[in-house]
Length: 333
Ligand SMILES: *[C@@H]1O[C@H](CO)[C@@H](O)[C@H](O)[C@H]1NC(C)=O
Ligand SMILES: *[C@@H]1O[C@H](CO)[C@@H](O)[C@H](O)[C@H]1NC(C)=O
Ligand SMILES: CC(=O)N[C@H]1CO[C@H](CO)[C@@H](O)[C@@H]1O
View 1 (tube, protein in one colour):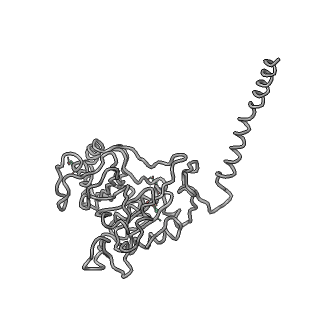
View 2 (cartoon, helix red, strand yellow):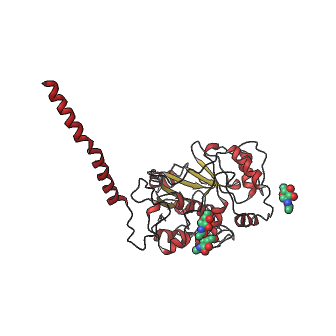
View 3 (cartoon, helix red, strand yellow):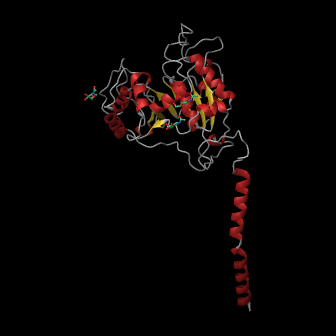
């Protein structure tokens, strides 16, 4: 008797549970539809390419509204990084990039990339994947306007922190923070990096790619147009190469050919625009007295960097302000 009751109980328990999983599935799907599906009825809602990707943010980059101003300029397919020797650099990009350096012979490039990707890893780390963590990023420029800002804690609270060129943190933590995840540089502005930091090489010229390979291996290059570091301390497996095609994309679509080419800071801002969900920009533009200098120095010639003929700092700072107005980033001045 006992045995039978037990059987009966088991049977009915089993029957009951059979339809529970499908019901849960249907319920989960309905909840998903209600909460996550994009509302296609809104006509100004021009979404970027990756509708299926959901990051763990309040609002993921791909799901942000695009205004016509932004949509006209932004190209979600533009690749910020050069991530393999087989990645094609279009011929119009090569022509422009080499012309900046007065070179018109691109036949060396496959060999240079081949050597470089023997020393550093291949592969793009910032692809859109389902349920990836939220990327909050701080782009920290080197402007003197950081002096006395007390932004250090705020900067350090971001997941990714981008700095550039000769940026220092030691002794300036209160104003600029202490963490760095990505350091953008070119040979003439290079610095040794602690473990764990991504060196992001900004190749303004072909020789910069050769230098990187050399500085991480044989040390054969000591001179470009000036003396450069023969060896650089950095984690080889964390080195990233800024894509010359992305460079041209910024120059054509965003800085609209103001200056000969965009500054390292501008390149870092647009790198963030393409890989981060939430962006805060610090240390760009003049200080409150209209002076341009670095936060770690007292510049005897304020204004000297305003118009260098290479970059146009006023224009770049206005562009960041415009992106802030569009809700793409927060601009801390
Ligand atoms: C966007 O970028 C991709 C990849 O670089 C390129 O093939 C495409 O032509 C670009 N689209 C526009 C509208 O410029
Ligand atoms: C281009 O450079 C390669 C390698 O340096 C050289 O062999 C070739 O002759 C050059 N071509 C032209 C057209 O200058
Ligand atoms: C606004 C703007 O300059 N858009 C340009 C972006 O780049 C593509 C390709 O070079 C041009 O066709 C667009 O006019």
